[in-house]
Image 1: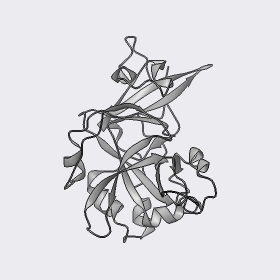
Image 2: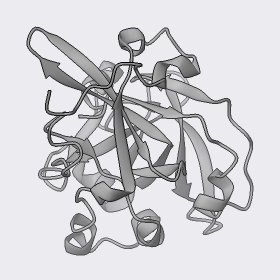
Image 3: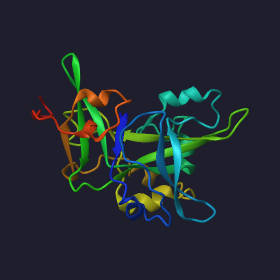
Image 4: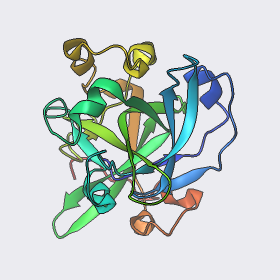
Amino acid sequence: MCGRFTLGETDKLAELFDLREWSPVPARYNVAPSQAVPVVVLNRETAAREVRRMRWGLVPFWAKDPTIGDRMINARAETVTTKPAFRRSFRERRCLIAADGFYEWQRQGRRKQPWYIRRRDGWPFAFAGLWDVWQPPVGEPLETCTIITTTPNALLAPIHNRMPVILARLDFARWLDPTYQDLEPLTRMLVPCPAEDFEAFPVSPHVNNPANEGAECRAPLLKRIEPGA
């Protein structure tokens, strides 16, 4: 799964996502479910990419209670086209969720060791995401999102049995286009990213508490731990 991520490098996002307008966002080092995250979507009216703030944890439009979003922080690539919570969004409401790293927890006996995964070149990247709009009986609409996960690549396999889908930049345009609804090419994008482009290192359990937000969350441990240890 993908349950925490970071967005510390924000000055390159306008270039990465080819945005006409970009309002800087604060650096985040321990983004957790239910929090607001920057999401890139395609505006149907202007055909321009824009950034919106959405709550992490998808609430389907048909939900009776928004707390369902607590269980919808991830969508499995293998079932995203068939599960009622995700299938309409997969056709019509795909998005890019900005990040520059993420955490996974490796089980080691009775404990879990957190690992931080990032690009070797330090650049931010995009998770493949879905979004939806939920209208409460009273009040403003709620926009929410989820991150699609897939099987791990060679780097992640010793650490966890799932990883987020990280899209290639060349796929951004088709992924964001809500008029493109050919499921087969879209599902072919939902594969592990190249392992050689990323690196992983263990970090302190400090990151386990979502209230901890500083850059120390992703600081490498002084004592090196191998993924298969």
